[in-house]
Amino acid sequence: MSVEDDLQQLELVVARVREVTRHAGARGPSVRLVLDCGPRGEREALLAEPPVDADGLVGRQLVCALGAEDALVLAAHSHAKGLVLLGPDGEVEDGTAVA
Image (cartoon, rainbow, N blue to C red; front, side, top):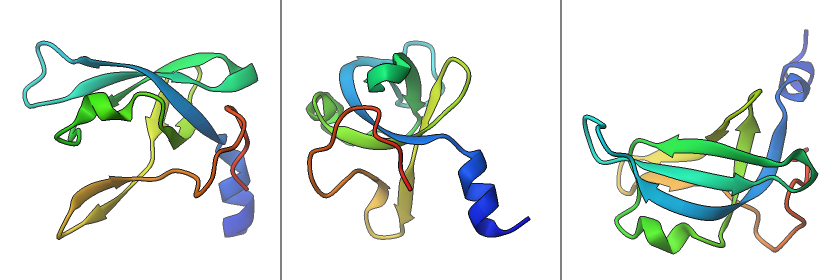
């Protein structure tokens, strides 16, 4: 199986952050995101290393890998900046597939 085939097995979409709440009971700082995945519905995701201004994520579009009932937000891990969340360069429809 090629890398392209492997990538197509993942359901990667652009989702909009609708809600951010602190994740109570977590070992470290983390937040729960409610994501609008357009026609794929809403999903939840946890960020274990949220940005300092996590509330500023509301309305932002991020790239996510969808699971059955939840999602995983994709990020790049920078030694200088920590986690850098991935999103489109421009506005797209919520639920747009990532190719």
